[in-house]
Length: 156
Image 1: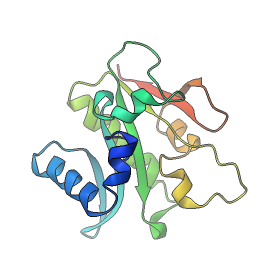
Image 2: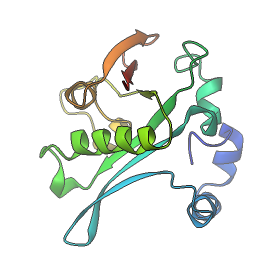
Image 3: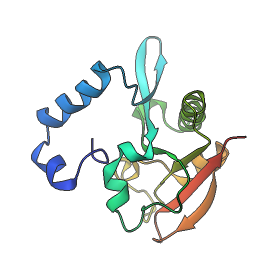
């Protein structure tokens, strides 16, 4: 919910309120992203939706829109610890692009984090890393911050 709400609203809703807000999205069958399973256990998540659903992106000076094109945004990429470094992130990114494409997207954008430490703690890279986006076919199109490129994949 971090990108789906104004910062103050998100901060007030930490915990159950934000969880309930997300449940409402899922209950309304809005399909806010893609999951990956291993033996019926969820092991990865990728949030993807039309950019306008992520209102905080528009307010970000670093991640504000590049142009007037209709864009779908990837704002979260989580992989369970025991499944990391196995290509699951790349597979989820590709699945997110396919998911968006089936819903009419022509451009999918992501905002990965460039780690600033030798071993960046996993919670700091919840939006993915550039290497996974590159492996999934994305290209860097802008960078307004040293650690946050804007990467796009145009669907033909």
